[in-house]
Every structure is written in structure tokens, then in C-alpha cells.
Length: 329
Image 1 (spheres, one colour):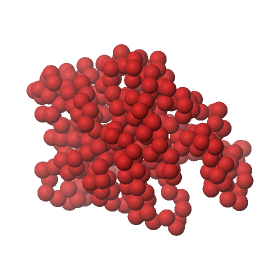
Image 2 (cartoon, rainbow, N blue to C red):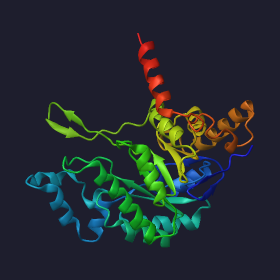
Image 3 (tube, helix red, strand yellow):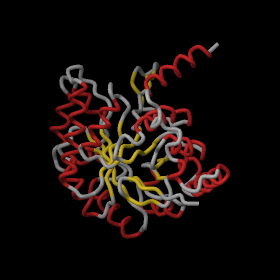
Image 4 (cartoon, helix red, strand yellow):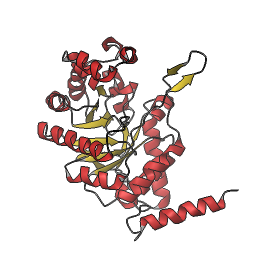
């Protein structure tokens, strides 16, 4: 059974990648994921706030966000609250690249973008095999238009591509009015992979304390529907690799993503719940499913449920929408 695939120009032994999580914050965790069968690892994100603090520019960053509400600075974690700082992050990349044999993809999570190029270059020198840009997905300023947001993505991508020879992936949010066009523009401007989708964690309100509280909820299998849709729509329309992220709990979600057209499937929650060795379980069950269905390789099954052969995807989606509404009682 041939499970090999390619992601952002990297050859992988199978399509299941360990996404960023507490398991990818330490060398020990990365080694366990490699032993558990991961074809590649996405390191936990290095945040712009950490980079600016390291460069002594955190005060200016705070001022940009505080405005007339000084207490807003209290919303940000202190530099010491992060599990790993910029220097430690670079050392993790160096030590992991020397101690493991699978691709290591660093992750940057930024807002303004001024620091991206410098750290992308340093991550390249430290031994990372690729970089994932996780651009913060929520724009709250009503004066900022959609075109400005899209241009920001293109500018950040251009800056990073100029600073490093590493392949570059963008972890996207679905919050674009014309997502297909935006994906095409990123592809034409050099994105080596698009990861769908970034999760935005909404806070809850404590009605007793009258304050917002951070809430983390692990992704659930029904969350794959949106990325499955867009992967199926974009399959064979872009040069960039298509990576699926979110909602993977069993091999069934992996199969669905691949049938839609994904080159790779990323999972974090399932590995947190079941342990790093669960990757081997997913790979084994995927292989068994393929054998039963007569698929000799990933390339033979990838995209057979995509919209590549549908003349009018919009009409199909509208018909599907109407059918669902009419069938609900």
C-alpha cells in the first residue's frame, strides 16, 4: 500500500501530520510523535507578542492596543507566562532537527507582520524544514476593508518568501467574502501550502463576575464539513498543497479529507486524547480502508469526491442547501 504524499514540496511517508499542540512544545514530545508514526510535526506557535518582548518593543505594541482603556494591557499574558520564548524556540528547532528524521515545520502567529521575516530567516538557519504562517484571523476595526485584510496576507507572504528558501504554508481562516479568490491570489504569490482552517477561540461571559473568560474546546468531527467543502472546491485549481486541519478523531475524518482532495491531514486533539501512538492506529486503519476499497495508493483516492469534475459548483451547493432545508422536519 503506497501511502506517500507531498506537502509544500516535502516528501512524507503518509498524509497524517501532528499539528501544533503541547506535544510539539518540547523535544521529548516531538520524539514521541515521531515514534508514534507522525509523518511531520508542526511546532507550537511562536507569537508576535513574544518576539516583540524579546526585541524590547513590547511597550509600543501595548500602546497600539490600549488606547484610552489602560486596563486592556492586563489582557495580555506576561512574557514569563509563555511556555517557551523566542530563544528557546530556536533552540528547540535546532535540537529537534538534529535528533529526528521527520520534517519539522515551525509556526509563527502574528498580527502586524514586521517581525516575520527576521524570525523566518532564523528558523531556517536553525534547521526548520518549512514554516507555517498563522495570521490572526479576526479583524475588529470597522474601518478596515476586506481588501486591506487580504493585502496584508499577501504582504506578509511576500516578506517571508524573500527572507527564506523554506517552503511557506499559510494557516487560513474561513472569514473571507471571496475565499476562493483569496486562495488563488496566495497561490499565485508563492504560497507552497494552504491549511484549512485556523480556529478562532471565542471567549465566554462569566455572569457572576461580569467578565470575559477564555474557553478552550477541542475540535469535534462535525467541524470537518467546512474545510472539506473548500478543499473539494479548490482541488486541482491551485499549485499549492491543500492541508486539512480540525475535527479529526478517527480514521473516517482522515478518509473524508483525502477524498475531498487534501494532500495532508493535521490532527492535535486526537493525539492529546489518545496519545502520540494513535497516529500509527490512524495510519493502519486508513490502510485497511484503502485495501478494502481497492485503492493502491493515496494518489488513486485523493480528490475523487472533489468538485473538480463539476461544471457549476455553485449550482450544486445551492441545490444541496435547498435539499437539506426541504428535508428537515
